[in-house]
Structure formats: C-alpha cells, structure tokens
Amino acid sequence: MDMKKVVTFKVLLVLAIFGAMTSCKKSSSSKNSSRATGWNINDREGGFQYNTDFNEQETSPGLVFVEGGTFTKGRVQDDVMHDWNNTPTQQHVQSFYMDETEVTNIMYLEYLDWIKRVYPPTDENFRAIYHGALPDTLVWRNRLGYNEIMTENYLRHPGYAEYPVVGVSWIQAVEFANWRSDRVNEYNLEKAGYLKRDAKTLDVSAESNFNTDTYINAPTQTYGGNEEVINAEGRNRRNVRVDADGNESNIFATRETGIISPNYRLPTETEWEYAALGLSEIRSYNLYRGRKKYPWDGQYTRSGKRKVRGDQMANFKQGKGDYGGIAGWSDDGADITNAVKSYAANDYGLYDMAGNVAEWVADVYRPIVDDEFNDFNYYRGNVYTKNAINDDGTVKIVTPETIVYDTTSTGKLVARNLPGEILQVPVDENETYLRTNFDKSNEINFRDGDKRSSRYYESFNEEDENAKADSETRKMYNSPKHNVTRDSLGNIIREYDKANNRTSLINDEVRVYKGGSWKDREYWLDPAQRRYFPQDMATDYIGFRCAMSRVGSKSKSKTKTKG
Image 1 (spheres, rainbow, N blue to C red):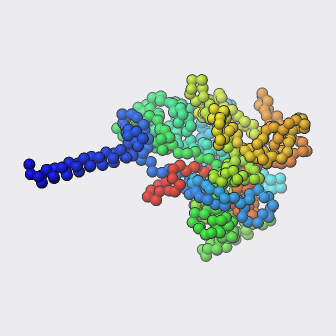
Image 2: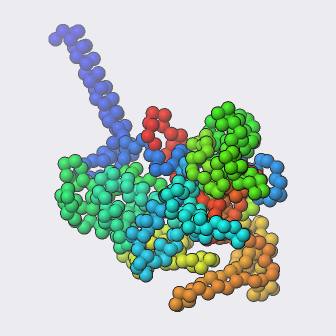
Image 3: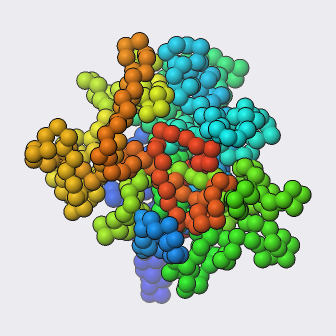
C-alpha cells in the first residue's frame, strides 16, 4: 500500500475518533441528558420529567416586575411626629412582582361572585364564608357627615368599578390573594391542557374545586379526580393532559413543569417601600443612600413638567377642609378616592404608591426594625405550618363539614380554611430539632418580647405578681385583651378589657399599613412612613395590592419580551 495513503487513512481515523468523542461530549451535556447520571431526562418511556426548556417566570395577570437590590429603608426626612419607629437601615430585596395598581372594586367583586357561586350563602353551612368575605361598607359613615352615597354605591356601582376597594381587613386581603393564586394557576393549567376546558366554571362546587396546594399534593382531589366525563369534544378525563392527537400524557402537572406559578400574597413592608421609591431609573449617590422622598423624582408634590405643571402627583388631603381643590380648578381631581391610573406611575410602572388609599402589607407591626439580625428580605410575621396527614399517609383535605370559623374582635365570622384546601397544622419538633435558622412554628416575637429577647422589659403576670416570669407572663407589649366568642346558639359573647394598667395597643394582631391616602396630609406620602391597624378591622382609607415572589434569575431576560 502507498505510504501516503496509509498516513492519510491514519489521519482520517484519528479525526473520526476525535469527532465521535466530541459528539459524545456534546450529547452528554445536552439539556435533556443528566450531568449527574448521563440518563435521559424527559424520556417518553418514563423516567425523570422536567421542563428543560424553561426560560424565565412569566408575569402573572396584573403584575409588573420589580428588580431587587439594595436601598436605605426607613425615614430619611425630619421626624416631625417623633415616632422613632423606622430609623434608616440598609436592606437588600430580592426581585419580585407587584400589582401595578391597588386591587379595585371590580376585581374584588369577581372574588365575591366566585364565593357566592361555589359557597352559596343560602346554604346555612356556607353563609358565613360569603359574609366573612364582604367588605365593610359602613366604614364610610361619619357621625357628623353625610356619606350614605358611598355606603350604598362605592363597592358595587359601575361608576366606582376602577376605584380601589376599601373596607377590607388585612385578613380579608390575605384570603383574596389566596383565592387569586388558585384562579390564576387553574387558568394556566387549563391553557396548558392539564385541566378540562371550562372546568373552572362548569365543574366547580363546594365539594369539588381547585386549590393549588391540593392539586400538587393530591391532584385526584380536584374536580372529582380522574372521573371520566363526556363532553362535546369527546371523552376527556378531567385532570389528564391530552395532546393534539388525543393521546394522554403527563397526567398531572407538577412544580417541575414550571406552569404552576408562585402564590399571590401581600407584599412585605420592605418590598412595598422599595417598590414605592422606584429607584430603577435613578442612579445618583444621594438617592442610592436614601434621599428620595416620594415615589416620583423631586422634593415636591406638584409636577414640574410643562404639560401638567402645577398638577398634584397624588391624591391626598391638601389642607383643612380641602380634599381636592376648588370646583372647576381641582388640584388632584378627586375628593375621596380616585380611579386607579389617574396619576403617573413611578419608574417601576406602579401607580398610586403615594395617595389614593393607604395599603396593607404583610408585616406584624413593631416599633423597632431589627436589622442587626437580618438585612436581607426583612419581614416580621413568620408562622410556619405544614400539611396535616391522615393515618394512611395522605394529606387531610378540608370538607364542607370540617370548616373552621374564627370570630374576629368585631364579631364577624371568618373561615380559617375552605373546602378543598389542605388542613394546615403548626410545625413541630420533627421540623425544628437541632435547626439553627428557626426553632418553633410561631416566630412573630423573635428577639422582641419572647423569653430569650434582649429587649423585653416588664412582667405582666396578672394572676400572681410574685410568680416567676416565663415566656407567657413576661411580655414586651401590654395590650388590651378583648375577648369575643360565640355560644352554642351562635350568639356573640363580648368580654371588654377594662383594665387601667394597659400600656400599649401593639400586639401580634396589628399589621403595618403604608403610604398616604385621600384622607392624609402630605407628610404620609413618604414611602418610609409606617402605621399600624388591627388585622381584623377595616377603614375607608386602607386598601391593598398583591405581590408575587420571583423565581430564578434576579434580572429579566434581555432576549425575551414576554414575562
């Protein structure tokens, strides 16, 4: 054989072997091939199923993206009220999403309509569910004012459809967010083919409805499980994904599909304040260090732009007896609340982060922010729970017969859980043993009033003043202990605390609310200002908006416009 041919053959052989090795290397690094085991991911014949095509979290309805970062949380202006309850601290916030507007009347009415259809108040067993969700329209009444037009019309009349809902307690706001999470995930699963089309309206009932956590942990408990039904499109099982050829696949969606979004919730105080400041487009040293006073740029409430120069940037009370200016020459275009998006958004695209209505946030109120312990996603109010488990190892689902109602301090019954949800119980030693990051279910009083706190200062043991103080008798806040219960006939029994040794209105049931309202003076428009109100009461000037956590990357993809 010619020597040149031999050399050429050897070179080609080496190149072929190298090419095969390179090909194998590329194959092993494929997104559908495990880097841990080399096994195939998403194999049609079974095995590990995972969404390897996931790009980033899609923006859920009503939300805008807020990229996280560091900022100065707390008051940076003069403390004219001498509250001293929010000294400046440096905090870092993870990226999240927030409603571009406050929750409006029409949004809340959709919630009430769903409750009324699924848990009809004509059924005695469900009556308290609907009544417990209703806003308190009597908050508009004033002993020396005529406001009956708002009492009768503000919630339901189409003229107020896009106005922020008020008369909603913190507890009711949390329940709305939970309901909204389920409805959005229900829609996403239907759109992806995991739930039967229109099941969310045709098949829903008190005995069989959709709850996100239930679907993840016990999917056969939603919409009657895998019961076969016949519809106009042919036979289709309720919780089975069907492809274009009519073949069933991926029977239930899981977290790994990326279709199930995180829950809607109330924003934390830190998130709300960070979002209100709108620092995304502003990069000056003073603003980075916390010198921004309002959600908009500048130190004044009036616009300096030529087109709208002199107009107010928010809806607030401008002086004694002045809620909107002179007729025909209105300063802010409103006397009570105003329709959302009536004023310019801040740099994050968020409307009314100052004025219109103040807003509930998730935090339990304390006058001191303990930044020495945590300066990352600061939040006070953690109560950790877990799914209740039956004897056979399955999760315990709430039924119409096992609904638990709480009686608020105002005497209203509020459902603690709804049929179709998984019963929640406090975490115990099985989850807390030898942990360093938490050691009990309720951490509301951590470093602020519990037995180990360095800040507790008094013993309020009313039964025995000489008794040794412990975690139950030695407390930081000596607030009134009103007690409201119901007897076996459902009659309200009120026990009003008339003790004259109470020193505070602060307890574990008061929540922070932020932002000025139509009823507040300019001072309260500063996002750093903070106040508190009982979580089971409502007013005509506090509303709310929802937030959602961001999963994955801190920043949005530059190549993808959706999401």
